Image (cartoon, rainbow, N blue to C red; front, side, top):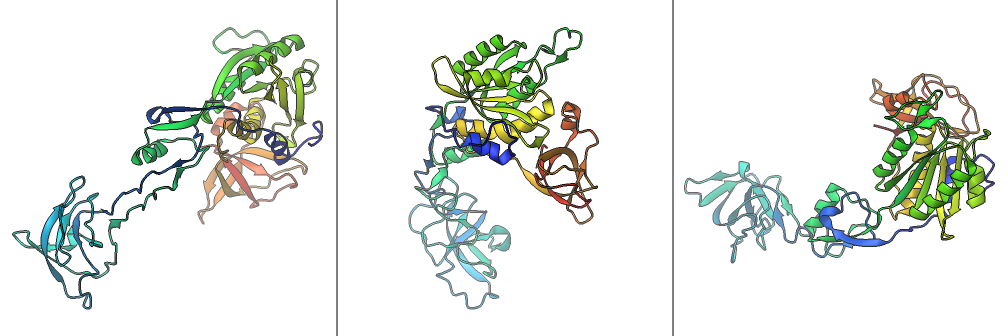
Length: 417
């Protein structure tokens, strides 16, 4: 394990704690209709082919291409219509491969028929009993959804750890699944620390600020499919903080605080955390977000609960949650960690940078004349500037080892919108 008190790169820090975090919540069976946003506890395999039979992909006429003489594709075929197949009402009985059948989108294609000609390419007799068309450009299985084309029977439809989206619910319903086994929702306790913070909605004491971090963190927790537990504000008192942290670790699967992890006289979080458990690391070689305490605290039953002490500045709290806390919580809850969407962009202007830390700078994205992304670094980069975070399209990632970057330098941008 790296030295907890030496600044860690983001990758080193994530490895230091995530490698020691494993799935900690139990599974439960719930109705499919209630499964949105939850995480699958185990693989779901399809009990059947989807579709179960070859189906027409459009309205037209099904025929047997292999049965007919295709030597002259310029010469139209003239076939007798011998039946009809509709979605949910397939043709019954034998279909003569020397003729064709009227077929509609989603209808079952009769056995022995291997192509569908769109109705707009067909000339039909007045009686409707005869059709004429050219087979030019028509290949075997044209306009037919083959059995098992969407998913084959026995194949994994959704893997364990997948977050169940509306699309996933549709897929599970299509294979007849009405109940799914999911992980219990992760419970994450959230506290703010400091005498200077107050809850929104009430009077603001002299020299105080409204607490933006707790609402921010609770919404980020909900966004990854976990349930936040709001434990309010803890004042700058070591004994009070120790009591609240031990209680939080006893009622939640993980604990997050914000503030109190730097080196100020009233910053008690790191010392209290050391007295309650173990620190994996304390400082990150990133900007914003250098002070971040992470490790484990012992709850009232003596069990270890993951703990994350985030910086007090909102932007720093946001960056460290995205880079460290979110992936760890997803792993803890049995989910497959999902990386934040990223684009490659070029800097719109030269940018100052100090080697030895990764910097996350708020930026706006535009397209240049060639259609490539260009990142315009925002003028305001203060760690307390929430408005600049709202206005930004993304976070420009300036690499750990890089020094000053020239205009046009290629960088990654983590998308925020």
